[in-house]
Image (cartoon, each protein chain N blue to C red):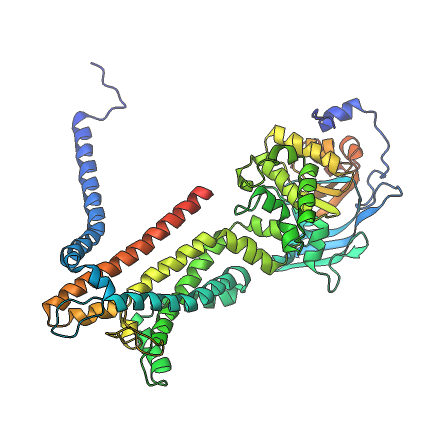
Amino acid sequence: MEVSPYLPSPGYAQWRKWKSAAVTGVLVTCALAVIAPLFIIIYFLLVRGASSLDWSFFTQLPKPTGEAGGGMANAIVGTMTLLAMAAALGVPFGVFGGIYLAEYGSDRANDWLRFAADVLNGVPSIVWGMVVYLILVVPFKTFSAYAGGVALGLIMVPLVMRTTEEVLVLVPQSYREAALALGIARWKVILVIVVRTALKGIATGVIVALARIAGETAPLLFTALGNTFWNHNLKEPISALPLQIFAYSISPYDDWHRQAWAGALVLMALILALNITVRVLSRDRQSAS
Amino acid sequence: MSTLPETASASAAAEPIRVSATPAGSPAGSHPVEAEEIAFDIRNFSMWYGQRQALQDVTIKIAARKVTAIIGPSGCGKSTFIRALNRMHDLTPGTRLEGSLKHFGDDLYGPGVEASVIRRRVGMVFQKSNPFPTMSIEENVLVGLRLNGVHDRSVLQARLEESLRMAALWDEVKDLLNRPGTSLSGGQQQRLCIARSLAVQPATLLMDEPCSALDPIATAKIEELIQTLREKYTLVIVTHNMQQAARCSDRTAFFYMGRLIEYGDTRNIFTNPGNPQTEAYVSGRFG
């Protein structure tokens, strides 16, 4: 029988199939190893935390030591308050800084700005906490919600700035030119045409930054401090989910440990919700174009 | 207008050779001697990108309410030239220019002259249609007016219809005004961009290869449109397509290596070019 010169010998074909299966197996194992921690985290949070989650967890203050029950209502509200304050600082500075980087600055100035932003993005969050402690806590002689919000906001600025720049640069030059050719002033072109075109991308960057800072604990230890009661004045300490989780999980009480797990589950759900929002936003962006 | 493709060589064979109003081999910049209004009076214009000189000593008078085609091989400076006419280079760092450019008597680069004011009078349509993706058809047409401070509803409404009619798009989109501009076909998008430019009521419309991304039918529509627009507007069109220049322009300027080589009546440029380089280019021997 004539053997086609294009076909490998049966033995060689077998060897190649085996090799292919082995390498594919290694790659699948690695891919699974990457996503496995997510499932491990969700598993433990559900097993340990879900049983302690009840209505009172969302509506009640922490109970004094020794009393069972209570909740983290003040910490949940505190985290939202801190995120709002951080966004009030981080979004305008970050977005306008990103606009400057993408549209205005000279190449030289931008190189330095970008470098500085990247270094800031790498500053350990506890260092942010220490610096804000020196600037906003020591002079006023009190821990405060303001100091916590500023610490988180400062972490947000370089993150938002860089993502804003990245999405603005992606807006095709032809839209800028078309708008300029209509005799529209440059600042209006940038705000109304360019930023509007990139708005979903900017919103995505902001939400990613919020998700990143929502779980920050270290910068809040020296600034917001934590509070077992409602915060009625932003000049006073405020509670936050990560702080409450930290305080409860280093305590010696089983009941508090359970509450810490429940708090971690709520925090994780919040961050997951933010991430899902990002997915939805970016899917719209892709389908729109 | 006739949409029959009239190639340069075919018309050269069919037409009796006319004596050009531009004497053969005359220096670049002389133009047909007629008493006509001049839209652009450009003298000794040179331009540099950093160290590289893109335009050398261009002197040309572009007639008002006529179609002037700018032709030449890639890199000859024709796009650089047309973009200088509404100061689109302002944002490119490292550009430098010399000489004088006047539009209906006003110095385009004079001290204190604002580029945005110039661009309202000298509009531009680009190679690739670029309706703003976040805006509806109506918003696209009106954005130039709105952002320049026109908010009177009746004015906007009138200008919307007028501009779309002028761009021969009204009948196709009058029921879809709230649809995104990007939902239209390529040719419609380009006509939408023309309508958007016309809405701010420029005197002159520059077109940088407006048909090079379009199919032949869409191209024919734009060319037809150019014929109607010439009655009210001065049109300057950069094109790679010599048939297009021959079909729809009154005057043609041939650029090569940053210089204006020859300028004159389109018919003469294509049938009786005065310069051997022009002849080589229009007959398709290079470029």
